[in-house]
Length: 349
Figure 1 (tube, rainbow, N blue to C red):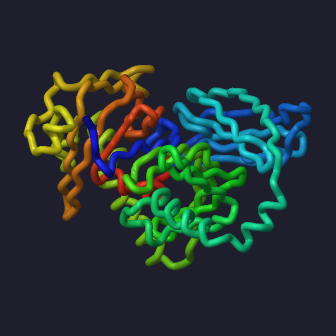
Figure 2 (cartoon, rainbow, N blue to C red; figure 1 turned 90 degrees about the vertical axis):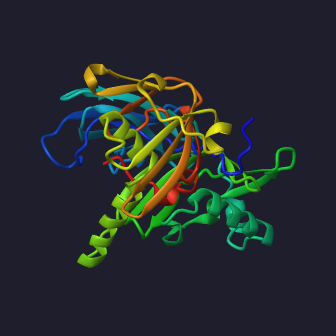
Figure 3 (cartoon, one colour; figure 1 turned 90 degrees about the horizontal axis):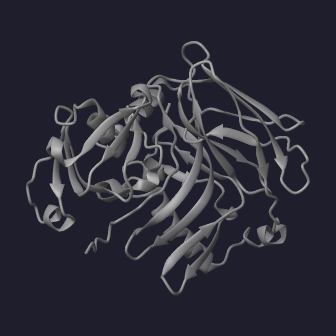
């Protein structure tokens, strides 16, 4: 039986980009077009944010509700349409080189509670207490958390589920998060947040769009690049990319397979080819990963020491060569990786 206080299933919705380069370099690739309408009236919705989740790529709809996103590299992406006063909606698209794809959105309107927004301008003590618990659980306790903050916490509503002891957070607005350690601002819709604050475990669904912060200070820009590299080293994404490349041992990872009880007890069963399957699909653009037990993943390189555990809640997992999971819902982790949450997120590009 698994009883670990740090067990976490942080369901951050990522996309699976098949390009290892930056989106702004090279010739234009695929193009995405569409229209966003109100599901109740059919009226086109202008000024709606449409973006590829976990990237810096996005646009706003025009007055007629239409949008065009160009220069998309081949890959599998979660396209999100977000507008205040309407439910967030997402579609998965498979983009090939030179594709022009169409995806339309019909957003359901939601009742705005404007009067309550006036109240949270002076939140009560209980709201502030729950905000503190939410912030620690949401941003994490990794190396970048101290320099990461939620800029508009007043849009959040909280409640404690007395039956489960879970903290429930929700908002109809876009969360604005500034990460001064990594040099990004995130604009994110929160699809779900359920957290056991006593056990420090739970799950959340996040649809983030990244925007790089700008600085004329070259030293600060250099520090941002260094911090991003440090956040990547030893991460789950780094491990999965190294696993696909077959270089995980060379890059500082050691992996053992077994039951969670044996692995947490220190059992040494080094990973063998028979412990997992990794097969290319879609012409080698994506990979299917499957393994039946837990893996203990230890990372030691350049002074960094991490020890984490991972299992698949559903198989197989689909990922790209950069370690991006198409469906993060299939992964459970515990150990050091659970400390790194929103404050340590990096965009795909």
